[in-house]
Length: 92
Image (cartoon, rainbow, N blue to C red; front, top):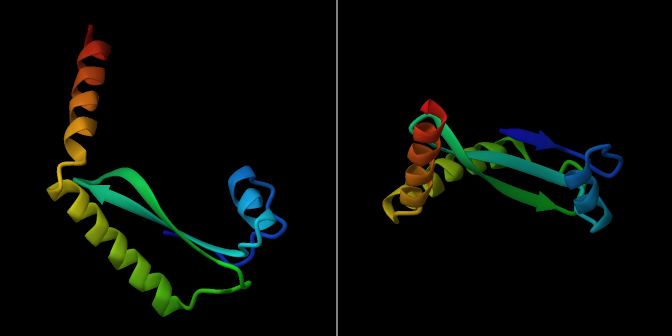
């Protein structure tokens, strides 16, 4: 998980864009299934330092639940099929 308490002066394009929209603090929490990251959950607030350590921990745990729900809902099936096809092509 990554917590940026103030992206107002960020050199990186995505956080800088959010900063220009008035969002100053960001939390990036990975969506992990079977030890593989398949997405990222992002939370943002307008205030600098907008997330407490407890809120960051809550978002970390929530990202685990979101990843599990995505798996159970079948969102990973297309991802897994594409991964197998890509691996097969790279073996040739």
